[in-house]
Length: 404
Image (tube, rainbow, N blue to C red; front, side, top):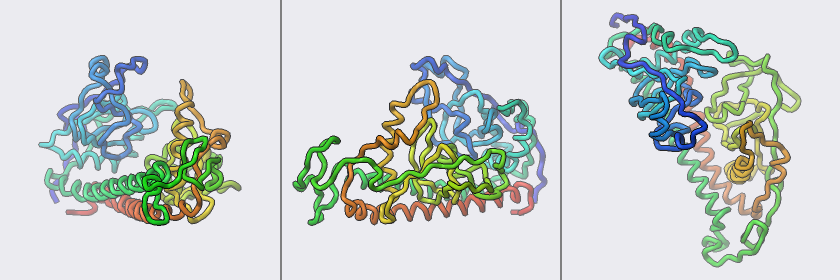
């Protein structure tokens, strides 16, 4: 194996810079076509899109600046401090991002990214401050990295990257599977083109439609609250003093975990109203964003301010449940706007009014949808296994324990 050399991060970069935030009070600065990255989107990942975009005017009137693709981005502030990402598209960032443009004559940017993943704890320990832990750009530039030859860097990064490529591909397939299920739900329960007894689309083949408070619906269907076919289970208030990051006990599923399916905290606490969440369950947050999702992580316990929507019969697919409640939650979201954080309560859910088809129609849909859901769950399970493999190999490759 070639000799490994130690460098400071700043010495292997062509450019190190932070970004900036256009004034939030100026509406013409936002909703443009320039991707703008916030640190909360940095989570040991690849960035292909951003949650928000800014305008050219917003870029010109702030310290935000264009960052070339394939930079290593390190979060500097708050809960995400020392977490890293690679941007696969040119973008801009806020001021809490330290953007490293790697000199590829010295280092492979993928390798640098994986090195920082492996040494996250050490870098994070340098953060200081009160409630919000902060790193600064100089600390990041002074952070030391060990580099083998470029050829070996690329081999190491290639092994880890191949695993991440597979994980990413599985995620894309899962997105497609969900889109298929959503299209089928719309066809059956929104457009009312479910197959009739002759196998023909109900509405377009002359199926009888009748008036209801929600407009025309198929004859034999009704309108009412969602509790005819579904129920809601609320999370429990686990003590934060008992949380741990050593994976002792059960994963604790919080609102912030619903996007990553990777809980940060675990707890050994079991409460009388403890509710377990399994892969494929429908979960939604109850603060700020009320977006239902199919949980695709490990089995865990549901934290307070999260809720789970469940079909009353086992024959009802969770895809049906999710697509039933999603527009209702979006409606609540639309009128709970303002300067303070919006909250979802049981009283809001009790007001949901939905179209109710016969159970037999739901069951026919569910048989098709569950095949898609099972595929999605299997790929999500494979991703957990792949991520474990990657995380096991990562430190061994980075410290030379495994020789290539």
